[in-house]
Image (cartoon, rainbow, N blue to C red; front, side, top):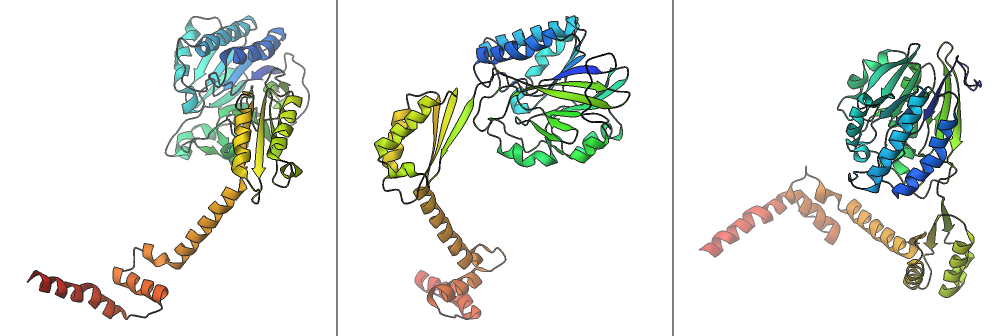
Length: 402
């Protein structure tokens, strides 16, 4: 397999565009459409050759109302993309993504393939397709099942030119669990990277993780737009060129130059800024906010444990930046964290000391004996404890009742 060999768009290579995780509904619909129109749509319109476009999941971000701007611009985008594909004789495929995002809303697009000249389909469940006469592909939308191996067994016994999917592979579980703009459902299957590579001649393109990542021939394209902090990396889409006869391919990442910027400035607990007065600290952060040109800015402030008045500083910061819609605060009061940690340590010490109280295999009289031994330093024989708890108490109850 020759990886990285450049093939110009010609008859020997199929030209495709991969546009995952566009998340209609995640932020203002007009901004969402403008980014796609000025970037992806204009770029694809200019291409001399385009054979296929695949959107590997998460077309939507949440449930949208039919009368909302999100619905209006979703249809505006899709109809324009379908016209581009029809004009260039390109095939268009949209895969179902995370259920909590797409929410079965892709089903409303199913009927469009009968009223348009564009070869268009929505892929709701795993399936293989001869996308072209000499190009066999596998689609893996996000689905939830009890037995992953049994569910995919039939499809993982064949070889494919390319695989398009949405979900998590074993090499990316940590990233999937910690990205701020996306959540991973516990029911979602985790695919073995080596298993996917073994059944694929060419590249594998997945959606779900919003940060571009690559493992051998497997790639997460990343989200097209940026709407959350912690994603300072470039956003965009991929153009791929694939030759079925050899399995050779080349792809390039096209940056979305219209993506909004989200930057984080960290003020660590050892910073000298905490040596200043509260008013000076606030003014210092205001200067940073005014100097940076980011669309959105987050201050992550770690107040030292020994800071004299953390509540005053927190109050002043919240009050000052409340009127700055583009600025967010994440304040960690380490003195509170220290107290919380101390409490947790004391609780853990008690649990270690009196572990037997929660032991379901111990009888009540055994627990009482152990407790008195630890608490008061007295050893009471177990049979004596049984007498106290049962016979002695029972005798007193009978005497009182008489």
